[in-house]
Image (cartoon, rainbow, N blue to C red; front, side, top):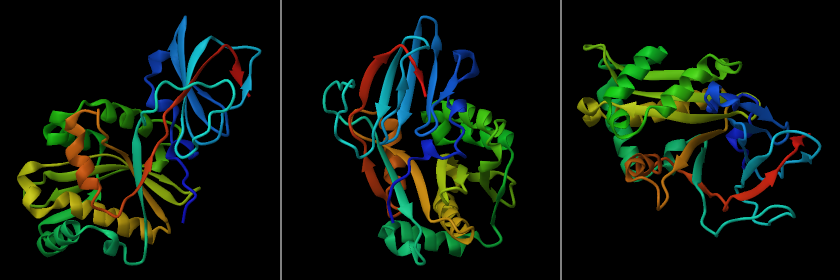
Length: 273
């Protein structure tokens, strides 16, 4: 169904809260949206879009600007690139009536096991940030990765676009523990949804609760009239191996990849229109 709309450009995506408040953060531009942050005399600015940022060079601090492109490969005047290495990769899945048919065989098998095992044992429900964060930090994701995603999610849940954010968990009914959880950001504007962060508890892995939660996300989004699910970034060579395992897991769900172009740079002392 393309065209591909980067979730950074959704009006529901709280761009400013990607940056800690002490870094003099500021949202820039409208179409495309970007973010600026830093301390005098060093400032940065970033855009993730295929549409070139527009400039008014009359004011503003001197800053280093990075433009992260998805499919656009030309280099407009005034921009430069360092090397040809792709900077990152994202993936999405379109929701079809029989969405499981696009999944890998192992994902379909795990989903079947979840459906057979979950009734009366697990319950999928909204959860609070504190409970989500506590379970995340005890999980393999929390032990292998930093808590930066949790900190960003906390800020997003208190920001202006907080209504677009949902935390959902798989609760083991007998113990009351969370077997898995995921943070979701929805866009009513584009009828799409983003997987932002997640975890599962190792002691429940045999019942495939994370696959069950992804299956629920597909079905719930379909019921809400959404058409596309964004799975965020995927591991590429050169990145920490800690991210590789979960990228391999996400890859099972009918993913279309967007291997983003090498970033473009420029130094500017002006203000975006």
